[in-house]
Image 1: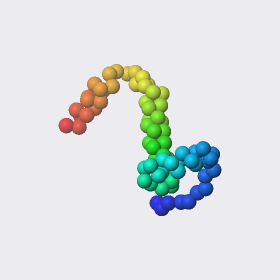
Image 2 (image 1 turned 60 degrees about the horizontal axis):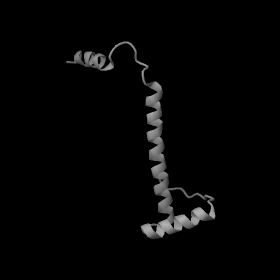
Image 3 (image 1 turned 60 degrees about the vertical axis):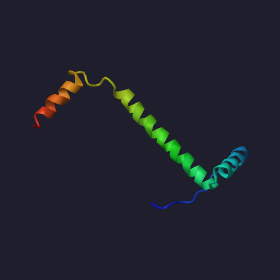
Image 4 (image 1 turned 90 degrees about the horizontal axis):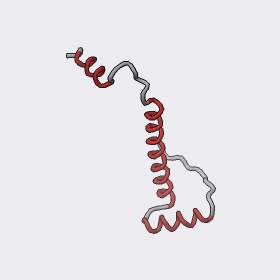
Length: 77
């Protein structure tokens, strides 16, 4: 998928910071913003996974999950 242009309104303070960061890092402001979005997405996707694990923890109550899994897989042999 190709890139899409968009306009984002940020505070003057954030604009000054992103300009400074970009100069120091030797990248464009657009690249700095893309990197920031990528990091945010990665963090949030991990949070979603962790939340899902937390919410479903303990839902299997029949027997030891690992033993059950091994029993099922032994039937494949």
